[in-house]
Image (cartoon, rainbow, N blue to C red; front, top):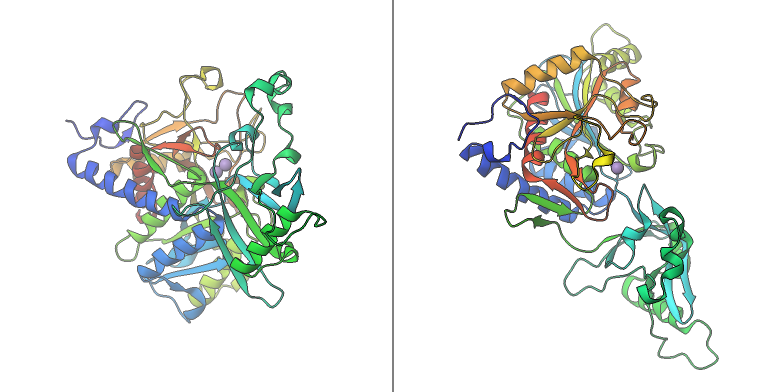
Length: 468
Ligand code: MN
Ligand code: MN
């Protein structure tokens, strides 16, 4: 079989991998699935990333007084947003090579005062996070992850629903027999988010009598107290997220795909981390991976890309590897301007069942490799960071030298599709940025689908870019 080499394709290339690449792709996909199964929230994605990079010799940046080429460091914000870097041979002023992704994913959060009883059943009241189709989240078994922090600063970690012996939770739906009113409504109006309470119990407190009010809720509080040492008030300082229960699985008789929760964007986050960890020695330019939180709600907040985390991290690097004769503030600005970045985020793969969503000849195809998206945005490219042709030409050369299989696409039909990533927040510094990531089927569904070939080729693209 002819080896894929250099290669912009717009066709199914999964059968063209060399024997060595096929084995590497299978190993890569298995390790990615093991990461994805652990990284079910942004906090867990962060902790698992730190565990993996520390095992590869990355050290906290604050523990390093100076930096030299080949040093491996990381820095975090609030246990959610991560910067990891391998120091390059060139001064930092020559610019960084950055892979920037995000580790938050659409989910169902608990409200600050979540516990309630209705009709003799106990529920958590919820508030969804990110862009979801609400009906996707009904009926399926859900797991609960997160933290409860006590006023004394102690933290209780919650992880219920993914061990075989664990209970799970469910947002219930009406049966079809009674569903005529629901099915007559527009999809956008049929599901009131205020009705998306998650069922957590039905048994009254054994010590309750006829006079006891909300005996089922009381029973849940008793269990929470006995098992986790938390009270109803402790939910005020908690971050608890409902996510699909279950682990990533091979999809298809040919096992060519992975179905999992949170491919968007942990599939690119993992690819960036692996690319960084697999660099050998000091790259020419300092190689950096940024994994942000809050992308799904606009990259806002202290742990989002729109915070100062990235530029502060660059300042921290420069403080340890200074640019001689240049004021520190100017050095930060020059380093940022000279940097280049792949905004590592997923895109929509063409689905033959929904041809009306496709941008003719410009939709990513499954198994045609990592996908470069020159611009996102909506309507007349509103909100896009449209990458310049010169940068993409350079990437074509880098990918071709390394045998990366890739494709170009856009986010759906003009005026029908659209979307955003963290690209525009980085482009603000004047650096070259373009989106590059894994095409997905049913993006933002509780279970998203990616091809192993495309996951692997996205990693190969990131590795070529960082090591260029
Ligand atoms: Mn994304
Ligand atoms: Mn998304």
